[in-house]
Amino acid sequence: MPTPPQTSDRPEQWLDLPQSQHLIDRRASEREQADWLQHVWGSPNTLVLRLRQRRAPVPAQPSADSPGLILQPPAGALPEGLVYLGAAREPELYGVTATDRDEPVHLLVEAAAEETEEDPEVSWVSLRAALALLEPFYLGLFTQALAISNWHATAVFCGTCGDRTVSRSSGWMRFCSSCSTDHFPRMNPAIITAVVDDQDRLLLGSAYQWEERRYSTFAGFVEAGEALEDTVVREVQEEAGVVVREAQYLGSQPWPFPAQLMLGFVARVESADTARPDDDEIRSVLAFTRQELAEAVSTGEVKIPLRGSISRALIEHWYGARIPDPQ
Ligand SMILES: [Zn+2]
Image 1 (tube, rainbow, N blue to C red):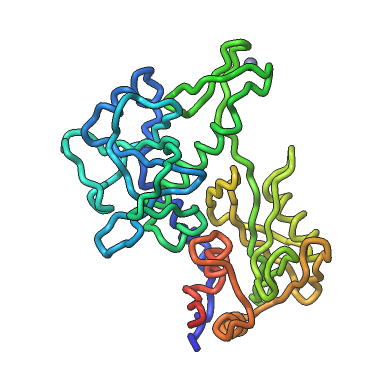
Image 2 (cartoon, rainbow, N blue to C red):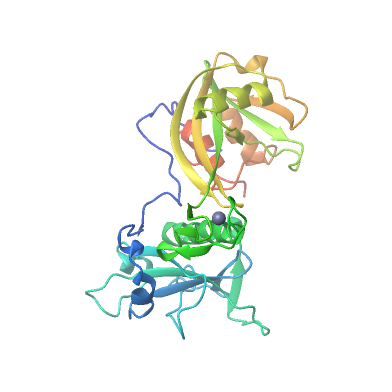
């Protein structure tokens, strides 16, 4: 049984999230240049991530020195639908080597052609599966690639006039020439919050749509015209029936399923004893001391979200350390 820390009161520390490590320089001014994709496509340092049905390629039999994702040099003519992701910061740290040391390592994403024959050396993984698998650099790359690809898939037609749009700015906007409208990638903000009471207990909820015994933090979409802190108050009231006294922002996680941005908070309430599940989405709510949560997780009595998710990071931020998974 792990000994839990006595306190987790460290407001200066933001969440430790693998996708939020700022390891790719998006080069926002360079990518505006009309011939930037052409230039990058011809660079000896360029590497391309090819996504297939929202999945990314990894070695089927990974070894200690194999890279996270399979990235390939450009081949053939400049393809349609290519997006510039950015330049890798310190690429050598992730096993990405530069041929030309004076040029940065540029990263691109394109949709992979449907292959008739499966390559036995390659496995295709979803971002959810990759959370437990990949280093932060590759996770950040996959997340960005999936988010922008999802947007392009839904933005082919102009939302104003319905005509066809074209990709511009190396894939970071789409333009409708019929009505001269610029369209930019859209994200849907959602809050996710730990709820902690005056006895420093953590309140978690279990949703009907999850397997039984699975507990997590509370979450919900930000509505039109709603401030984030109001969403925190509303969602906690709706799902757990307790009144939030104050809320503090701790960090965010892009969650491209298809376009969420999860904004993480810790909310303070007076007492978790008055909490009640809404009985619509939430089946049950439980308050835990650190000792109680560590015990419940180690015995399998309670399942908490996977490491790498913002909900797990919020729980461990309160806990003050990593909570070991059951053996
Ligand atoms: Zn239009």
